[in-house]
Length: 221
Length: 246
Image (cartoon, rainbow over all chains, first blue to last red; front, side, top):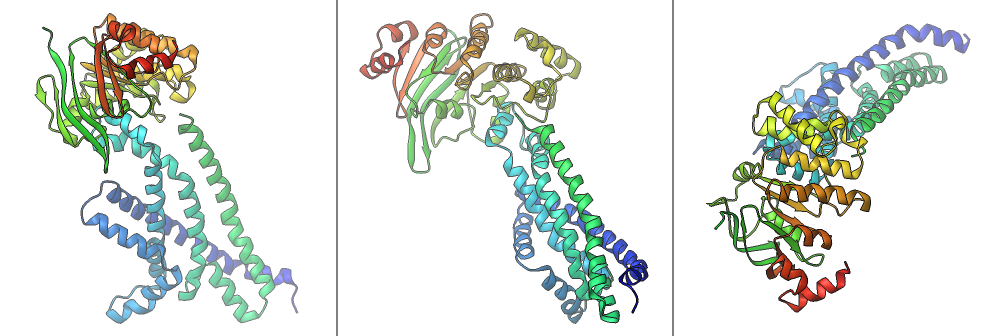
């Protein structure tokens, strides 16, 4: 029987690959989510006809179905109707589909958080709807949405663990694979937890600092 | 006979089913200072908010500088540059410095020349003793200072007409005098036409040419200020004045 330490050491190169993949998928997924979320929230803010309704429907579907089911659809159901993606692309699309709505709600919450009296004092100096958005609502709304964005970023990184069900070799999948092969669950789960902690704890600290900074920068009217 | 800046004819306002302004008729001459008085909830703020389109009205006409206002958002955007408004809550934009708060309207809305607008903004700031505060953010100012900036922000657009909605109501007593003096200066020196909603009776008495007394959404009387404060036409206004103790 090899010692736990040896087991861990031998598995590290595999975990490293999983770690990098988790980081990469999260990064792409989060950037994509922010872009989709921003588009949806702008479409809703300006009440663009048709698109505005489409965005609402998308947000409802996306927020009210689990990522697991969304991935099953993309990976197993779509090929039936002739649409086939690789596992990683499925994962990214799934994460963006999920994250886009969360980000959209975050931005919309920020825009709505800009007080009515701010909007009125903008109108009172003759700002047009677009100018009001550009100089008053968006700058304040974005800083109001930072806490929600930060929570979403952490949430989406954790959600990548579900990718294991479509066999993407990210962190969780790596651990489950190794456990299946060598039956050393204690060691591999330990490394798995450490792997997520290395990503999430520093990130969480950075995001908290960012929130504080934004709060100081724009509040206390 | 001076020109009429603003005329309101048979204006009616509802919030859903609730009728809040009844048959408002009002006209204001060039250079005139009208004070809107009345108990809380009488519709004073609602009325002046109707006058620059922040509230919709359901019936009646507003005529500004001889032209009937077609109440679309686009038209209001134009008219609001001519009608300055200052609010109780100051509402400077916290994301912009003092000078950028002031310059937003002149530069972005009116496309005034940037350097000229800046020079003028500084001059206006100096006139309210805030010349050293151009580059600070609103959060660093006291309430009274913020309100002075808010007045300057409205004036920078060169309005023909000013609306003051209880601008001293959320200030420390110490700050109030300074703001009132600025408004008085506007009325006396610059001959600005204005409607002032206030609870400061002494100030109303000092500044007003005419008092419009509102209760429950009805104009009960419109009386020259001197007469109003000595002998108002209605018993209701007399009771109101008696209760104010000033």
